[in-house]
Amino acid sequence: MRIRRMTPGDFSFAVSLTDSEDWAYVENDFARLLGYEPEGCFIAEVEKRPVGLTTATSYGPVAWIGNVIVAEGSRGTGIGTQLVSTAVDYLGSVGVKTVHLASYVNTIRFYERLGFRQEFPVSTMSIDTTGFGSSDVDVAKETDLEQIAALDAAYFGGNRSRIIQRMWRDFPQLLLKTDVPAGYVIATCTEKSCEIGPLIAESGSPDAAELLLRGILGNVLADRARIFVPHANPRAAELAKSLGFEEDFRTMRMLNGEVNEAERTDGIYALGALEKG
Ligand SMILES: CC(C)(COP(=O)(O)OP(=O)(O)OC[C@H]1O[C@@H](n2cnc3c(N)ncnc32)[C@H](O)[C@@H]1OP(=O)(O)O)[C@@H](O)C(=O)NCCC(=O)NCCS
Figure 1 (cartoon, rainbow, N blue to C red):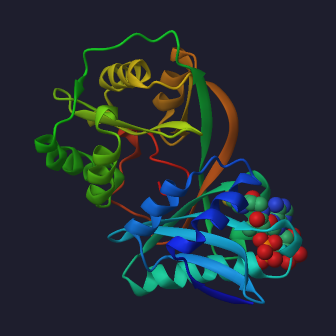
Figure 2: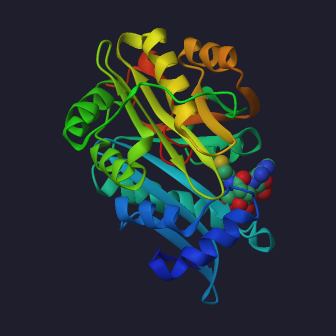
């Protein structure tokens, strides 16, 4: 078994492997992940055949590991452990102090053995969007991106500006913002899925968060949308439920390394994605 870096030639393998768990990726999702972290996406091979993968995404001192998956016939032989260790070591080598991930309930022990600790549950919730009309919440312009990235950093506790720029380029109608109180929301919609997040509201303002969430639900074209709600902000699940979101399943946010003191979960109403925070 060997672990090597992912290349664009691996995208179709990555989609077919993640399809086996219904993770709803398209090749472009992996192109974006590899673009964010060219040295931090890994493929496990056995006899030159790809059998597993993981992706890491770093934002300065804080990072996420996602897409930890091994083909069914190759599980239980240490490949998953080596993939996660490789990603953690890589992140350490680029100066990351805090590594997060979202674990299924049944893989918590697997990550605990790798040194991760449990933080708080994250609910994956979904909703039928058809009842939401178009809104007058502002669509962000390119000149807004710097301010949005600064707001995001104040709550997320890391620098996601390259992600925000890229999302705005790929989904320009799906980045909405409010000014007072400041807030923003992004949706990522492909032919397979539509995910809402990050959703950040200054001072944790539930009114701004609700305006943004209603606004983005009115703007997305897909009939259903998902959101990843952190229980560290109790108002986030309350808001999602009040609009009609229903929980599909829960994951556990986990941590390896130092607590990120710069994170302020009271303003975080939705994570960006399970695989990259
Ligand atoms: C989770 C996963 C990546 C582990 O990969 P792997 O190559 O089988 O892992 P390893 O062989 O290194 O370690 C397996 C250990 O973790 C435990 N484990 C792994 N996955 C588990 C699961 N889904 N449920 C319970 N235990 C699990 C195994 O029992 C084993 O413990 P043991 O060594 O005491 O027998 C693999 O099971 C997988 O691809 N699952 C489907 C996708 C998934 O759930 N990914 C995690 C997303 S958060």
